[in-house]
Length: 119
Image (cartoon, rainbow, N blue to C red):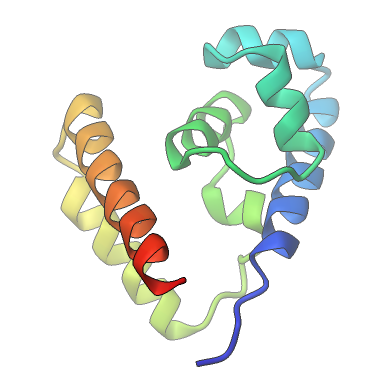
């Protein structure tokens, strides 16, 4: 299986967050406060450091009023990816924030365990 360049996406997401935040005239402090995050987390994201949760990216996309694909730069995604994005939306559209947070936490844990056993 081909290695996926995750680090490139962390940096791309960070650059896009910084650019979009500035376009909206927000400081890092204002974004952190609006998203309920620490200033250090915003700095970490904008610097492309890994280790943040999907929930964090979702919060920021909501505050900046943009789609997740805008943050990742995947607007021109292939049909398979578009299918999975639409499937995720369909599964979560009638769920509460707490239900989605719980499900994302479970999936995140599964991937972390999977990584431990694959190394």
